[in-house]
Image (tube, rainbow, N blue to C red; front, top):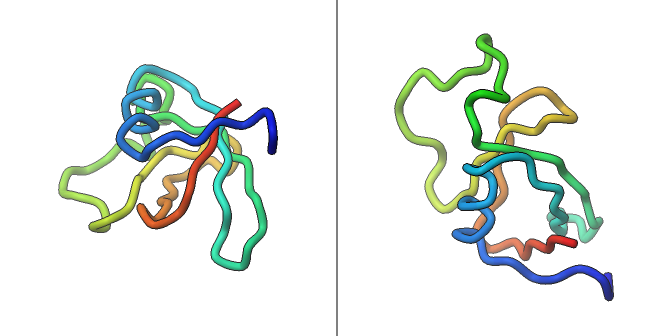
Length: 82
């Protein structure tokens, strides 16, 4: 993790809106997970396009390009980028 830099949830959201981001976060059980995500709707398949409304409060939502669906990270979780 020495090559990883902490990033705030708001900065991550800004990067996700601009394109694809590889980032890391610690899961509730303590395991470090990597994710490749985006908020760029041009990269989200039509079947997964948002229908409106808001996501869960106090979470950062992103489209997981590896899993092929929307995911969230609690704002209490730390996030890192390379």
